[in-house]
Length: 418
Image 1 (cartoon, rainbow, N blue to C red):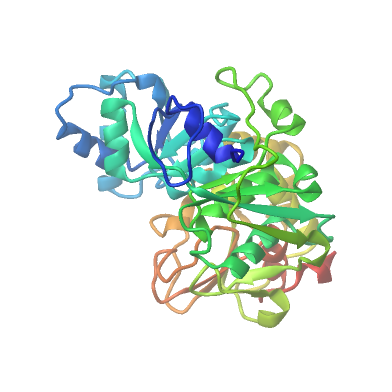
Image 2 (cartoon, one colour):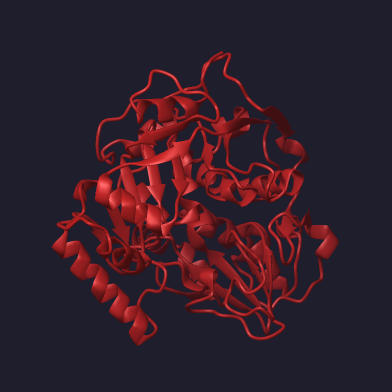
């Protein structure tokens, strides 16, 4: 029996020719990621019987969750991280203002085909869009990797997802992945690797592919892998931090199951409160009053996402009583949409431009909701209290749907605006 992409990458990183599903392997990751939580991880690391990080080149640290810091505690955490970085000679450190860790990690050329990336953030699965096996791990595990350079993983089963044909106008990869999660459930791929195939994927931009891999974890997946292609190589040209070898599944690779979707049948959807798999067509909740709209995050904070919003809002205004917050995923994206006129269109509609970072996605900073307020957001989670207030309500949607809802002041099918 052949090997899946996940099996091959784990074999390569554990010194094995092949690995079996369910096998426990000790792996050496190419990179280990952390962000503002580096402060807490460093305290765990200090309790280990080592003096310094074993391989400083393996560590990538990005400050993004609460930037700039909103309290003295957050500011002190950042100070502690900077001191830790200096003490351990960690070269790959990105201070406040650079952007969200997953976008920065990708832009800086760390997300590479065939690599194994572990990170102290569940959405580390994002790098699967480049053909990497990437997964979130716990803080204690990150401290252990800092100390030893390695950790163990179980080889996951894989689910093959094939998507064919073209997504309709006003429908994006966010609608596609929400539809898939709604079908299989928030635990439908628990500790499994999702592999995405089909001409729909082939024709997607790298940014759209990142949405799929980013949200694979919302179905419980360990990895969310898209086979690399020419688009991957073009993105990584003059960007890749090191040489890489693209990895592909064998024709006779073993999959737990194969799911097939016709992209032409995908419609605008939302994940309604308070679970990410509570997915319904937009038309089923259309008319629900919206207080706040958020476009951004590591899921949908890239240039194409803001252009989708601008396509809806160009020449229109935000509805009275509705707030629209824009959080670019990185400073490079912010510069791009400033120069191409996208920001001007959105600000003219009444949007509020914020600094690159996670913003209110995690409920700790900038844009926390009031009691009983409703937000429609392009982020990735909507459990109770996710955006800082357990008495608020969060709907997850595409940039198209979010922008249309901002203009109407209520949840609205974006196809009415296109």
